[in-house]
Image (cartoon, rainbow, N blue to C red; front, side, top):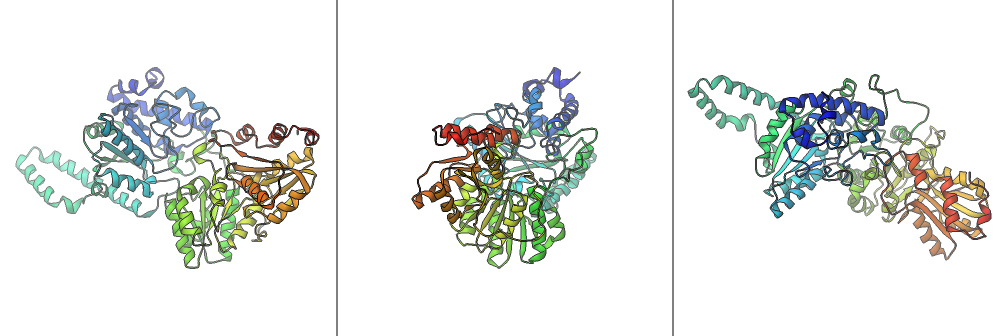
Length: 625
């Protein structure tokens, strides 16, 4: 019998099954997960590792009345499949389909929306405190990985929870992995706790042997109590006020259920240490959990196809530049907050291990660590996703910009990211960085310009962000030298009349397409801050209408900077600011979404027709390409 099809459409039906059926459910659920993700792409190895844990949590806890808060959320596909969303899995991460992360509007079982790490304990503690204050018997559970436990926010929450007297369970899913390999002293500490399992196993065996001899058993218990603190000292989590259980096997679903049943009856903060294997049940993912962390579509019988070498991505351009500049300048230090592979730093980490620093999922620390290096005359380069720089905003202002320290921020995944959706969208960085004094913001239009502007940024005596999108652009040939472009200078890419399009970043090429039918001038602005005011004034005086185009938020973005500059110049002409509106973007295919949001050549024509339908502009609309 197919348990998932015939029985399980909700956790209520799961809980009606006898405990002995759960291993079969786990096997079947894992196979369905493999088939589903292979057809859509998505987070894979992390989800395979939490199948049994997901089943056990829903089996023991009365969800959705009891709250499950998944940290990051890239391990919640089994959770979605068990909570009425099995039939929608083919729509995963597609526009109008299921989100790749927990989403409160998607299901009552998604207690808290997540996608950035290390927030689960804080949120679950808030829910537990709400239950305490309202007299509810509802339980709250936070499920956090060992990678996410490297972030300071997790400890801030545990420090608070340990004295709260709330009924909160924190489940540590310890798979000895983040997205990149584990780093830091915490990983070493968890490994020591793992070695403590041998003590626990020996204890169980001795108890079994001695129970038939009561006097010897009593003596052994007395000796254990006297010596346990030397054999197995109090854990860090116990010192923070939690009752610690573990480590236990995270793939023994029956054992997990039994442990959770005991813990669910306990009062106060509880901590369960569960050991899992990333990629469990799919041999290729077990052998290479990094490559299978977030694959695209693939054939489960074959595995991932070899990567195409036809086009360099912006990330690869950065990684190559970083190695080349490090060879040229011994002062360069590369920093990543746990995103070595995603940020293109694998080659750098191998070639310059002493100058490579993965600080774990600790964006705040990464930025201030870079500031400290810069104070001592080194040249730090922080490779960080645009969405994750948001987490270190105070450090960006207070520790770097206020002191005018020459830190380069390589902002990957700027603009629309696609399937990962609004939690990972990099459309706010122009707005939140250009308002900071001493900060400059570069917006390369293609891969070669990205390399050149990285060199320009590196040469400055103040902080500079260089923002670039995920994937490839126009496939521009990339130079091999370290030639820099002039600082804060734009260029005219097409000369027209009447209308000028001021493009920031990769949307330059959509502007050029639109300009052919509009006979418009196109300016590659290159810098959102500082603007090339000389070029802007020259173009403003020679044209009647203007469009600014950027793959970022309109509010406070590069277009707003142009409006401010024109106002200061006393130039008052119609300006159409094009970017993302004041709303969170959807998840889905990036090209489909760009069309939906009108940030294409056709979208430029349409917006012009809507904004300026009068005769002086209409003749420019010769044809829509």
